[in-house]
Length: 577
Image 1 (spheres, rainbow, N blue to C red):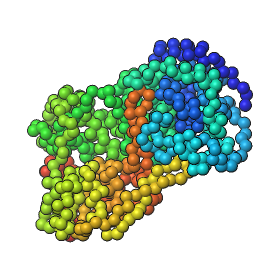
Image 2: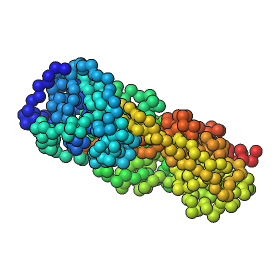
Image 3: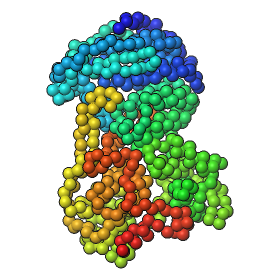
Image 4: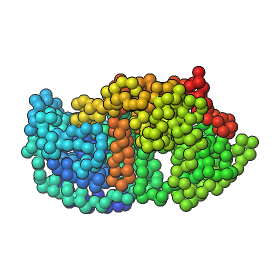
């Protein structure tokens, strides 16, 4: 490999700081986008998998900001090569950046004295990674005999056209402790970078983008199911960061990144936003229309169709929110309808409605609700027909259901309503429905041993339920739809795979597994799914599929206007015949 000239950091800091304070372009050249993308690709690998002590203790938020300022103005590939070397090679030995890489020797034997990173899926943030739970062998209590690192283990990657990098994934103790004057200068330069928290200037937006892209790239377990070329998405999201000129636009640009991952749990939040509330109506997309399904406003009846919000057509508002939503079509529609009613608390929203008689009504709806009103359903636990009981799992708690168990056990039929999220009753009710103990493994955490989805295996789990008395042995129906997500789908997975009931409605959201949350340099918080969930056979795809009903049925506008619950009617018909 040819030798790279490394300039003194003291000179670079002055020039970069001036550039970072003045350059706020709304667009960027292809060269500039390639520079930032190259830095992003190397950033994530070194941050999460290069096992030196220096890398583990670096302030990566400030380094991200410092790095994008350095690389943005590189005039060509040769200048980018020099800049990347100045940024990364002080962190320890054997990081190589060059137009081409020399051949490597075959991997050595397992060496329990080596230092290497290992992650057990994403989880609670740690001080070293800021994003995912991880440990280094022989540094944080994990012996090398468990991690099993091998001498010479590394990863090669393409950074940009004509530029590659090689990063070691295992170091000796001596290599991991490397401390040089160049490292001291790098630390000093990074320490001079202002705190990016709460800011949304260009370099902070770029730092957020590369930080978020890397967490998904290396730790999101659903790339196979999502079918997304995440590497190909990077340049577009960097370009989005250039054009996001406000804090809210910045948040939306990151939400577009999350949307492209196709993750129903994906969300970007900003604790600095004004308090959010909702107008006092609940909306759903039914028959392609934005329809009122619950209301606390006398002049807006259930079944009214929203035609405009703040002067923007309902179809345009749906399209805007669908673009920002992540996951399946059924979840994107659910989330879009919910987001349309969100507003800043204390304000009002002008909404135009079309009534059943064809008349239109424009209403200034106050933003007073913590949540939209609930749609009309029977009492949460009630005998809805002779010898047929109704239990709404989204409202009934364990304390309320426990004294009702004898009546439910003697019932000829039970309708369980899971059109939404259950209370604490969700898992609790299942032992009363099963007749044999189960030990199915349907939740899976990856053992991440390297970047780009390199894993050494999976740790698999289930709920390990055993039957409880009294057994609810009557005929059973579950109602569900695209509003059932995550924990709801864990419950519905049991119902479907263990054949515990007839399922009526539409597919659930198709997003399940533990949710990991991380914070990007600006302080915006991003959540995503960190656990792989399958069917109870350990194989069947759940992500982006969901639990499908036995009887497909969705509400109609005519049914809503007539005050009918068509899914519940169908459930009663099934139980009576």
